[in-house]
Image (cartoon, rainbow, N blue to C red):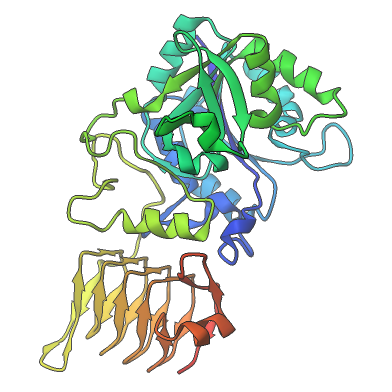
Length: 407
């Protein structure tokens, strides 16, 4: 049995601005020293799916570098994770959609001659053993199997919704329904697509070729390709809640976050820092892989009445120095300096940020290389913050890469 994994990593990520101002969404840092794409690639690698292409498009430089430098598999054994940018193989145009992205790279499918193709998204936070989904797909004989997760009926308007039929068959697939509560018919939850699919290779290739000839198609995997198979009665779903991952507790089972908005990104980050987190980065049986750091360990200095380097319920990454400041319920990335008297609370602070003496940072996302000058206030005066920075719908202050915050 031969498999090929395709990771769709070409989205613009407009709802994550300014974090995606000069990087692709899957390259956005997360959890201290990971990138969003590390989560899907770790799931595939841990499950021994070791032939992976990453289809990129928008602002892909940092993503390409990360994948190339980090995800080096054994060429001797024919394994690889490789970024594939838009190459205009079918004409002078970019990818018109996720289905077109795969269609324009069918030469890779022809070279690999897989029996089954895994098509997974690049920007979700979760652990999954995709071998279990593939096993169900093979046993069902379906053309496509869609990974599905239960979501509250009131939130279902943001997802592709699956109407189940007998067994695991999909009777209807509704992309972002306008009235999900009516669709639910009193049910508290609906099945939503996770954006992860497994196809029988021949069926996918045929569908992509037909879709390419359809001038009315949006050339989207969830919006066009999957519905084709649903209409033909050849689409099944896989219940992600039944997936068993080594080292995961019952509390973690079924954890999946779409971090497509600033608030979703922030909330997923805060999920990491509790004593008993709902998503545990410290699972050694199913690790999340990323580039190894050559930075020194984190350092906490000064123990005097007026200045103590302290961190509570937080993740503090390598190379950080908490120099007489205090950090609470925050994710601190590599190489950060928190100076004396500074206070950081419920925030995400990315690489090489400088937080000056006496500064305050609350409920904020601070991108790389930001300088917060001594005495500056972030997340304290909402009106002042709104005049200088992006404010999420949930009130989180977001400071773009390399900015300077003055007192």
